Image (cartoon, rainbow, N blue to C red):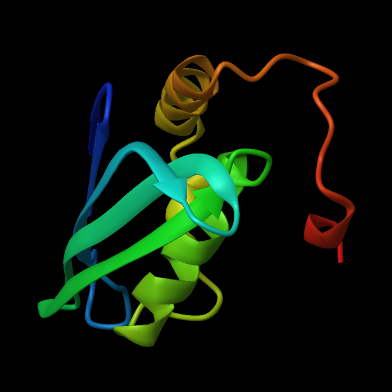
Length: 119
């Protein structure tokens, strides 16, 4: 199950058996300014993974903000999400979030990336 509204994505998954996994996570995000990176997005992943509380924040620069699922998945894995799993499987909702991030940041196709972000 997932629910999206601008600035917020809620994702919930219930284990189907004892070998499966569960999570109930929210990603909240908003425009932010970093002294070094400039404009970008501040993200907060909070909720539970396997009933363990999760509450971590991260910042992504404007040209990296669309890769939010990667650090969110890494954080969830620190709290028990299996390494073979990803919270990025809810494409329809990520597409909505991606579009909202793009609009908030005013990013257009062809906008340049910082070369140091490509490494």
